[in-house]
Amino acid sequence: MPLESSSRVVQALASRGYNAEREAVTLIAEADAPGVALETAVEVAPDDALVITTDHVREALATEPVPDPSALDEDATDDRGTADGVSASEGSAAGDGSPVTDGSPAPQTPSVSSGTESTYPTDDGGRVPDETGGSIDESTTGDPSPENSRVGDRSPPAPVVANDMTGESTGTGEYDEFVGVFRDRYERLSGQLRGRVNHRPADSIEAMGGGADVETIGLVNDIRSTASGHWLIELEDTTGTFPCLVMKDRDIADLVDELLLDECIAVSGTLADDAGIVFVDAIHFPDVPRTHRPSTADRHVQAALISDVHVGSQEFLADAWSRFADWLHTEEAERVEYLLIAGDMVEGVGVYPGQDEELDIVDIYDQYERFSEHLKQVPGDMEIVMIPGNHDAVRLAEPQPGFDEELREIMSAHDPQIVSNPAVVDVEGVSILMYHGVSLDEVIAELPEEKASYDEPHKAMYQLLKKRHVAPQFGGKTRVAPEERDYLAIDEVPDVFHTGHVHKLGWGKYHNVLAVNSGCWQAQTDFQKSVNIDPDVAHAPILDLDTLDMTVRKFV
Image (cartoon, rainbow, N blue to C red; front, side, top):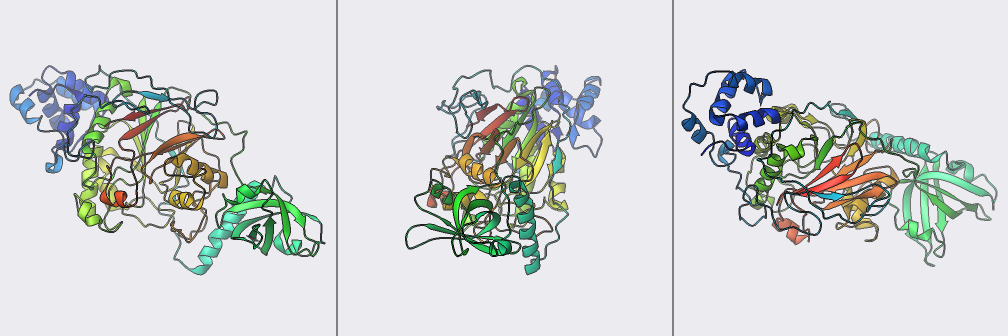
C-alpha cells in the first residue's frame, strides 16, 4: 500500500520515533516515491535528531533513491501508529470499540460537526454577547480530509510564559507559610479594590462611633445565617476581624450566594449604634473591569485549546486524537500554529477508587511514553505549551510545578514548553491564563446551579474571574501549597481564560474575557458514570488570535 497521504506519513514517522515539520510531511507525501523519500530523509537526519525537518526531506529528494520503492512503501504503512506496538484503533472514537474511518465525517450535531468547521462568534455584537454562552452558527466549510493540498511551513514565535513557579517552590508546609500566602493574597487583591472604596482596617472600625459610614476590605472568614434569615459575613484583614450583616430583603442578598470562604471582597455600609456590626449596603468584588479591552495578534494566526487527553485510560480516544493530528497537517489548519494543553496528559495511577481496573497502561512512565508517541503525530513546527493537571505525575497541591526532568525527557521529541499550573502565556500579544481547573468542582458544588454548573462550566469560570483568583477557597476540594507568594491570584486581566478538568465543553465572554473549557479526549469511564459525568469528547476549540473568535471542531 503506498504512502498516499500526509496522515500515513505522520504515522510512519511516529512509528520510527520521529516528529516532523508539516511542510516536511507534505513534501514526502507528494514525492514520486513517498516510501523512498521517507526512508532517505530518516537516513539524512542526524543520529540525535528528533524532528524530520523540511531541509532533511529536500536533501533526501535531491539524493538518488537506491532502495526498492515498493518494499519501502509497504514497510512504511503498517496499521496507523504502530509505535510501541499500539495501533490508533486502540480505543474507539465513540468509546464503544467501533472504528472511525479516516476522512469519514461523523453525524452532525446542532453544536459541532465532525471534521468540519462550526463557527462560534464571540464578539459583543455577534451571537455570543458578554456574560452568556451564546448561540451557534451551524455553517460548515472546507474539506477536513488529510489529502488536502500542500501547506506552508509554520515558524511561529515561541510563547512567553509568566507566573511559572516551576523550580521556584519554597513551601515546606509550616503554619507560618500558610499565614504568609494568605497575607500576600490579601495585599494583592485588596490593592485591586482600594481604588473603589475608602478602606478602614478592622481595628480602626472598632474605634469609630455608631452610625458612621464604613468601607472595609477583607477575606471572607465565615458566612452564616441568623435566626431571622439575614446573612452574617465575618471579614478578616491583617488587623483583625469584623462582622458585617446583609439583610435578607436587600437586593445584594443574592450576592451572598456567590461568596466563597477565603475570597477577598469589600463592603460599604453603616455602623450599628453600638459600633459592633456593619449593616451592608454594597458588596464589591475585585472583578474584571467592564472597560477591559483584550489585545489581539497583528496577523491571522490560530491556537488550538485542548485538555484532558488521558492517555493510559482504556477510554482514551486514540482514533479521535489521530483524526485531530491528521487535520493539523492539512491546508485547512495552516494557521493553527499553537497547541495549548491545559493538563491531564495521562490517566495517572491511583487517582480515584477502582481506577486500576480502567487502565490500559498501568505504569505511569509508560503512560507518558505513549502520550509522547501520540504527540509526535502533531506537526513538528507547532509551538506547544503544557501545564499539569490532577491526573499528572506532579504534586496535587496548587500551584503545581511543571513536570520533572525525567518526564520532560520522555516528552522531548516535540520540545514543548512545560510550565506550572496555573500559568499566563503570551501568544502573539494575546494573554492566555491556563489553569487546569480543579477548583471548578468546588465552585460548582458551593454556588447555585444558575451561577455555576457542569453543563455550563464557563459560568463557573466567570466566578473565578470575578474573584480574581483561580482557587479562592482553602481547605475543601482544592489543595493549596504555601509559597512565598500566591501564584493563584489573577493580577492582570487575561484576554483568554482556558481550563479543563470537568470534561465538559463550554465557552462565553465575561467582561470581554473569553472563557473556554475545552472538554476531553476520554470516553465516559465507569467512575464517571457513578458520579453522573457525561463528558464532551474529542473537541478542539480553535481560537483566532487576531479576532478572538472561536471555532470548535469535533473529531468523533
